[in-house]
Image (cartoon, rainbow, N blue to C red; front, side):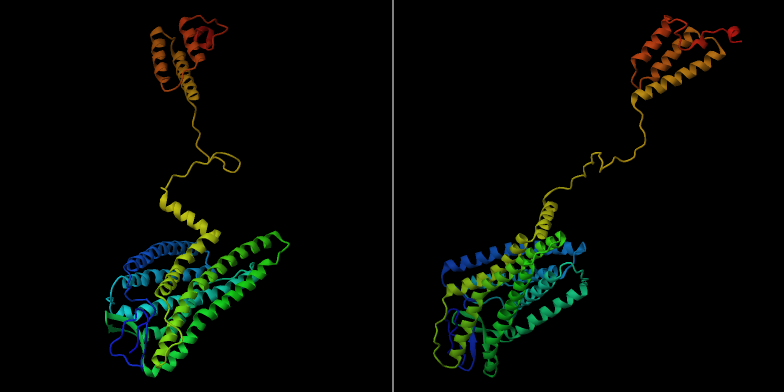
Length: 438
């Protein structure tokens, strides 16, 4: 009988002709009670923080593309964040749930698609990094060249990346099945005898095609791009462009290095477990022993933490993303304030307004109007005291809306008391008789 490398549980009714194995501790019961609580808790923290960071980065990229800043590199970063979000939302919760139970209780569909979906997302990330390195090198080689990018072309690139990623991982879906063990149902990968030769080649070619080749390709082009950035230019505009290109290359290079380091332990465990399963299916005693459970769990946690590290690298090393993050944070946390009125100056001139008379001017205009009306009445008849008193009441009422000046008040006081002399009389025509006028 074959041994399940995850928890050394014997699989019932399996023959030596079948190649039966699963990832070490991937979906199996954890014997220590502390691990059954600690590992799902760590995965939950990674899931919540990672989803928040990836959604933030995707929103910033989408808003930049909506404002006309569509580029190949930003689109590939969006695809990378999208793959990380899929891993965190549709793989980590099921993995955490499987760790907390004694047997597999998530159903046949999840068992059939869980590993395939995870490997497809990881392969899509690897292919995206390779394409991103090539695009970065082309941009750094001639940063002043204007390249027109169409959304249809970017979607075609995405389609081929995901088609390739889902195609190379088909055996992960094809040979996964549920089987009953001593502790209940377990999700294993059983390779029939007729497919043993294919799988023996696949387990060696798959890591080379998904991990080694794309990341080596990306590191080579990033090294060449960094060499292009080191060449200084005499023009100030080109120097600024080179500084921006160097920062972009550093950010994308950091993404590649983080993927290579954090994904490497999982590949070591993957190859190790399949090598042991292959030797056991042949009836030979394997030369190496199964890896400890703690090492396998650490490899998986590092792989899932990569989906959290990627958006943090992008948000910390890119000035464009930092500005977008600050703007998004202000829109989410601060209330909308009315725009402040600009101060008049040489760059902010005041707007043209309709003239508004001052109160003093308004009072003077009313006095002039009262004087004109009194002149009209004096031409028809001589003024009488009652009329003067009535005029004063009208003028006093007319001045209620404005500010009365001291000169105006003195004028009415002298006119009523008769203290003014003829030479100082401001309206001498009111005191002339009709004969003098003739």
